[in-house]
Length: 236
Image 1 (cartoon, helix red, strand yellow):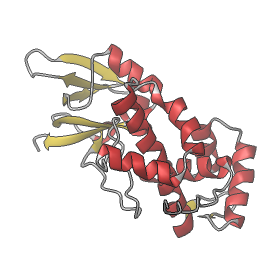
Image 2 (cartoon, rainbow, N blue to C red):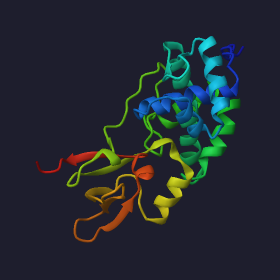
Image 3 (cartoon, one colour):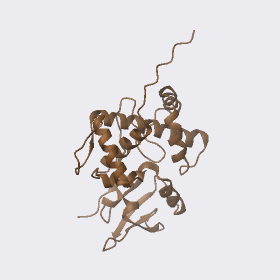
């Protein structure tokens, strides 16, 4: 007789999962979790974000006072990591097993992850060999919540002269990925920071070989969602 499958943990509403995931993402990037920042990250109004923050506080998933920054509680962080693990494993499965493009999986995985059982997600992890990063370079939390983040620094923070490899496209934004594809840029490519244009201008980088690489100018918004594993620091 087949063994009884483990009971599926009751999940909070999707909006709650979306918010704790977004808060975790802002905290991971070192962005202050304000109502305005959270509303922008989720594409909602400030009043909607404010109302949900109050709800999350009542659920003890965050610590937050009106007109101040929010932060995830221990329970909130644990929930965020479970949501992220489920989402990124499904994205990896779609790309590696079903041949989805790396710019196609965002909406598909969002729909699937909500319906996927814990058993299904863990079988995906087994099938893929328990990866620690997804195809965009985002870390996949372990079943125990441990995160083995790839070594890398946000491109926007690097000084001219820094050289390394592109290791992460934060959160797999499809528009960013399609733009990188148009530029012929992919994970693992050599990145050299050439200079910063003044007055808030773009970060100028060389992609590829020092002599034959292509030069691109990345604005702050794009440079803030790319991480580079630095192999050489700029000269002092």
